Image (cartoon, rainbow, N blue to C red; front, top):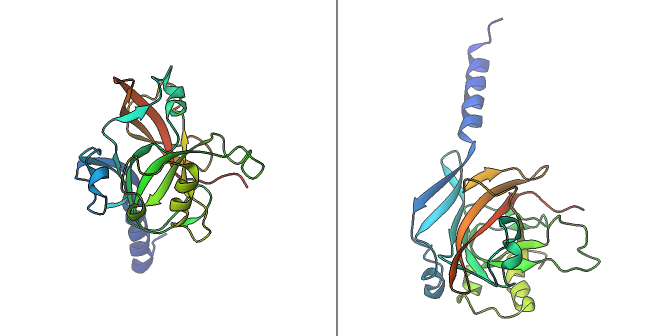
Length: 222
């Protein structure tokens, strides 16, 4: 059976569109975004890790050159537990609006990334497999790596990014196994899309690695 010319053209266009929309990772030499304060930019790596759909970067991450840890991780699986809450991790730029792990809308823009722990109370228990989160703060509200000193201040600053006032959060997870090659795209749970990162860190002045997965698409259990 032959398809009419128009129908055949539509099929070809659809297939081409699906192919173009495939998600990939790209690492590129790139200075931190100009919106970031100098105090943040000076501690960031001069390269971006991009989540690219088709030819469009939807996420761009600039990670800290050396992330401070409380102690050297005993294993890759325990790296996130070695982070101090509020630690400045990096900066992310979103080229379009995005829904976070709480299913809140985050507008396109540039955000600082800080490490947060899920409160262990009745409103939060059982909503996430792991208690670790990347807390996104509008870049103009976070200008110094050491500038946010309390959990309350972090939550308030991040809440400016959402209509609900809830902090904008992306789930962080320990890596599966020893992590392997990074960065790479992963699918750590049903309906979860993530990136495995391996970042330079320091613990008591010694070099270490921080390995984790960041869920860029997926949401909490309702």
